[in-house]
Amino acid sequence: MKRSAIGIRVHSGWGAVIVVSGTPGAEEVIERRRVDITDPKMAGVIQPYHYAENMEIKRAEEHIARCAAASGHLALAAFRELLQQLEKREYRVLGSCILLSSGRTLPALPQILASHALIHTAEGEFFRQSFRDACEGLKISVTGIRERDLPDHAQKAFGKTAAKVQEHIASMGRVIGPPWTADQKAASLAACIVLHSS
Image 1 (cartoon, rainbow, N blue to C red):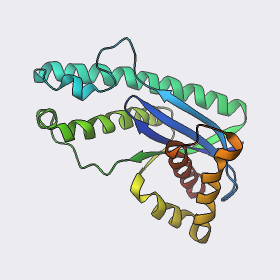
Image 2 (image 1 turned 30 degrees about the vertical axis):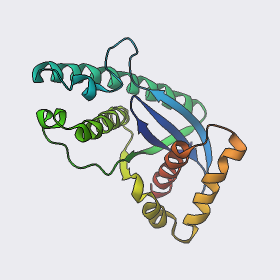
Image 3 (image 1 turned 45 degrees about the horizontal axis):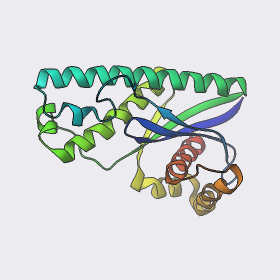
């Protein structure tokens, strides 16, 4: 089985998911996809905390719990299917990395709902947690790296070849085509760090 690792950059309701394999500076993207983890039939799922902002606390808790259950189910199903495809192609996933914001620790729900800034932070963490739970549920180890710390982690993982690895990732879009945005580049670097640190 060939070694691979997953990188995830999360947005409200979805994540850019990249799977890489290969040697440092010669990695290849073996899978890339947008994984949607919200049920379009449910109200307020893309921004669950915004939707719950003016609700009574018990109702807000129930809404957020319903959204979490739905997102968790969708993330788990998507990653189960991804792992099955990778296994058929003889790839073994060594681990995953979820890119983190530099957000602070969240207070209790009433304080979150009273602050627009905290609502945004909570929603970012909400969807990251869905991806984390899916990976852990499938026995995939999860590393969290703050996005702004990616270059430092790359330096630790690759030493003198860190710049070469980053240049290789940046240039991959010319070979594999769009989309190759900041989402895919950051998720790829995160996956490469996990791949070569395992």
